Image (cartoon, rainbow, N blue to C red; front, side):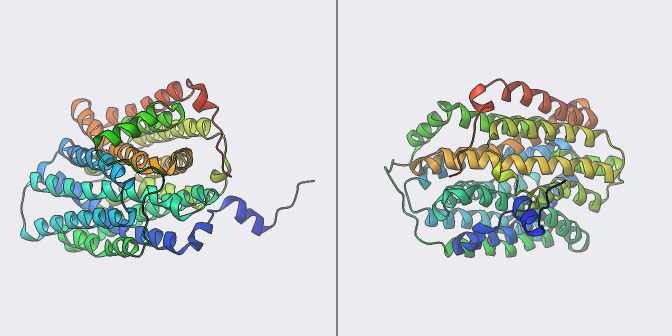
Amino acid sequence: MWPTVSFGEFVKRHLVDTRPLAVPAYRRLWVGQAVSHVGLAATVVAVSQQVYELTGSSFWVGMLGLANLIPLVVFGLWGGAVADAVDRRKLLVTGSLVAWLGTVLILLQAIVGVPSVYVLLATVSLSAAGFAVSSSTRGAIIPRLLPAELVPPANALNSLVYSLGAVGGPMVGGVLLTQGGFAAAYAADAVLFSASLYAAFRLPALPPLGEVTRPGWRSVGEGLRFIVTNPILLMSFVVDIIAMVFALPRALFPELADQRFGGSLMALAWLTSSMAIGAVLGGLFSGWVTRVRRQGLALTLVIALWGLAVAAAGLAEQLWLVLAFMAVGGAADVVSSVWRQSILQLYAPDEMRGRLQGVFMVVVAGGPRLGDVRAGATATAFGLGTAWVGGGLACAIAVLAVGLSVSSFRNYRARLD
């Protein structure tokens, strides 16, 4: 006879754990991200389309990745080091203001009508610098606001809210581009970003704990050495780099929409939202994810699934089928994100969390930008299909070969108490 499970027990075990939202400071951060990420995602669609209209080339769309990557690396590492030495609330406010200024300048170029891809790349770089500082700081703040057992559920909630924004944002962006042009999309981002600023201002003071190291490249080096000498941490970064650099097809969306779907802006919006749709479903049913202890092995397998889903999407001809396979990939990606962030936050001491979050942010945000460059360059050299399908297959093969070869990572069991 099958055991009976009540509806309440099913919800508790399988749906997303919302207990972290009972903490007011975390709840404000979460809501602020939920609102502002819609605007950010709308800008991602608009900038990609504006660059493609200016150049007609996926290579230049991919160069947006490089424009993001350099400030993400420099200011992500630097911001993480500073976060270990100063009040994290003040640093989060500063980084958020810089990111908002970049958004305002992108809006101004659209209003003035400056037809230059270089102006777009420069303003995107400024936004990326502020994003790098604020993101690495925010990741180091969360373990200060919540007890250890609520950190994995908080990461699941963070992934869910980013995914919701990534679904709604491109849809909003597509509508705004159709009805009001680029300026309308950028204006929405500038207004919605105020929710993030409010949440940062309302945080309590968060002075550094433990030994304070003077911020600078020497302290950044200490954080990097800590990662390199800990195989579990190192591998959590390596498998994510493989996933994003080898398989991410984001820079190919405008070309795919143009070649297969008649240049439809709504097709572009759906493509941009496709991974996030799957990520929302994965996040909503993430209750089981936070209880998995063999996180190294599970992380390797789920990233292989991501690569195979991307490859299948590249072979599909119908829009709905492309979206379905990319949604499967998005669900796999959100699950991997929860485990990677939890490994890092719970494995590191507080006095190192800012620097390690800086490295994490560089990998998480920089990896996709390298993926954009890879996708754009390989599509230009070998064609859209080869760049898309080949990248997904290469990801699956590489992550299984690397992830299963390191025994400490393969056998890693999380401690959640």
